[in-house]
Structure formats: structure tokens, C-alpha cells
Image 1 (tube, helix red, strand yellow):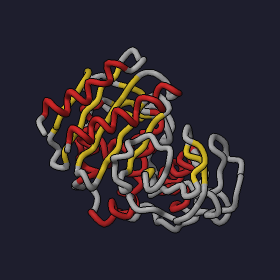
Image 2 (cartoon, one colour):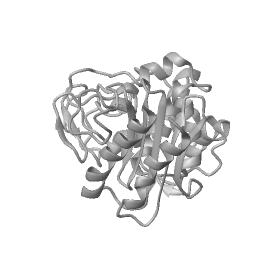
Image 3 (cartoon, rainbow, N blue to C red):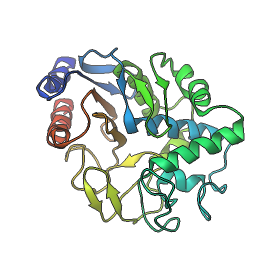
Length: 276
């Protein structure tokens, strides 16, 4: 495997029906293994924001600003449930659709409540906490939260390479904290994976979506079941494959749709094959 081989695979973004796209693969030591497009261009992350927000929450748990099982959200729900999408909130509203821990209901509202909970406990805005806890320490100077902690961040591939390296070899969080976040929480819960339909076992960690046995899925069939990450409605994704010890970032400026369903899995397959 050479950097050129990986960059060639990443070059498939040139065929995507988008105005602008950029991508990179990074190793667990932070080394860029290949890239394509303008890695310094800022893109809306949409729900890839949840990875950043979840990491901020994990650091808040470590410092004691939050407790995993402290009540938050609907009656009977906790910070744990907000992170794992088991609080029972509807996707985009605070309507309650299920009792906590009975279904996996992917919810932007839940992450907004998580952000409000952290603000109450720390006396800081969520954007400020994220910046001071995550973005500044990692040198992510082109990244900012410009809206909801569920979907409001803007960033570059270059910045997200630094974050992806942190997700493989953490410096800010304890390794056991990251391992727990990348492990399935409340196993066996059914739910809808947005864009891909009902999954009988809709595996999720602490803010991180886990591939597990989901099918269909936005990553490659060649990605390991341990692969975790997130995709965003703005045409963005970031996955980390712990078995391959690499992460892949792809950002685009066209909203998620059939084009992404068709393009992303073969794109990731090409990346994995180049790494092999």
C-alpha cells in the first residue's frame, strides 16, 4: 500500500454529483495516508457534529461535570440515554415516542437536551465548552459550532484528521472512556438508521454509530463490524475502523440522498482495498 494508491481511491470523489468534495485517510498515528480535494475547505458537518459533541460530553464525564446516569431529558432518562439515542425523544422534536431504553430512536432533540444539560452543569455555552475541551487542544482552528450540538458544526477535512487520530489513539480522554463510547450501549434495540431503514439491532455507542451487523449501511461491506462514526445530512461522513487502524473522512456540499447511498459504500470499499 502506498500513499498514491490510497489517494487514487479517494479520487473517486471527482465522480460524485456534487459541487465540492474533499476526503482523506489517516492512520492511528495521525499520519495522512492519502487525500483528495481541498482539505482546507470548510463544509457544514450536519450530524457528523454529534461525534464532536459526544466527545465533549465524554470529557465532561471524566472531569465530573456530568454523570452518566444522572437524570436528563424525559422522566426516567439519563445522560446515558441522550448519548445512546434511547431517551425516547422523537427525531426532531421533544415529543416522547417511547419509554427510555425500549427503542433506539435517533434524535437531534436528545443531543440538544444533552447540550443544555452540560451548559447547566458547567455554566458555559456548549460551543465554548466544545472549543476549550476539544477543538483548541487538538488544534482544530478551522472548526466551530455555529448552531445545534446535534448538527451545527463547520469544519475541514484537515481538522477532522486531527479528531479522527484522537479517536484512534486518545490523548484527551482515557482509552477506557473511548472504548466504552465505541461499544454498543443497550444491546438488541431495534430502530431506524436514517436513510437506510429499520435495523433489528440498531447498534449505537455513546454518541458514535456502530456498524455491527447493520445492513444496508453507509460504510463498506469490507469494513469491520467494530467500525464506528457518523454521517451527516449535508453529504459528510467520518468512519474509524479499529481493526484496520485507519479513519476515513469525506465532506461534500450536497445534501444526503440517493447519490450518497449509491456512492459511499463503493467509495469506502475502494479505500479499504487500497489499504490492503
